[in-house]
Image (cartoon, rainbow, N blue to C red; front, side, top):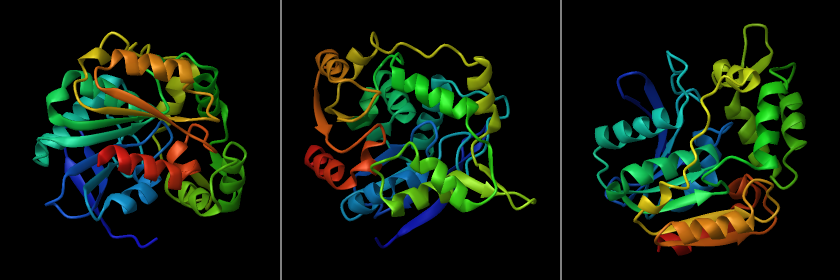
Length: 277
């Protein structure tokens, strides 16, 4: 894969967001929102596949990647949604396609329910309006109680492989590279704000919003992508979402767990391109 993106930053007032921009500004804009432990580079295969026909913005959401950490440790869905509104306004993106995975998918649903007039299309990847699955609890526990420091880069890769049976070695190496940073002591730590982990560990996070009542406000074509091997979004919940969102369909991707677009990028990108066209 040939990378052809620009690293960029935008100051949204409270903090500065880092993002990767792919493609030409004259093309339709697409904004990509990663999941709880993700980053802008999580989307590299997807961004690369879209860059010839779309202007792609893969954002490091607050507290992740190279974006600033929240000065008041605000990692609520409302904060992420407000960040996206400011980001799109500052960049002059009045109408755009929005794709979100996991936490980013919930952020996308919340934004779409509040600002549906700004969206051309919406993609939701392997997440529902309410966090109540065994998989969601698993991810929260992994983040709260998993290792915070690694002696070597290979230790990071080995750790990530344990929960990622379908991801290619290349993707796993990229995930490890951008999800961690080296310390002065030559060990590796996660790049995300430790406050996010601490909030998970102590249970001090604000109770996640139940979005079932708000998603009927989403009035743009919507596709719900589900990993068949995922323990997060069931077929039943995905079908219920299509019944609540006025213009929605669902597609299931095989050989994919929760990280659908990283586990099986070829099939995911094929279905995404169908939806966007």
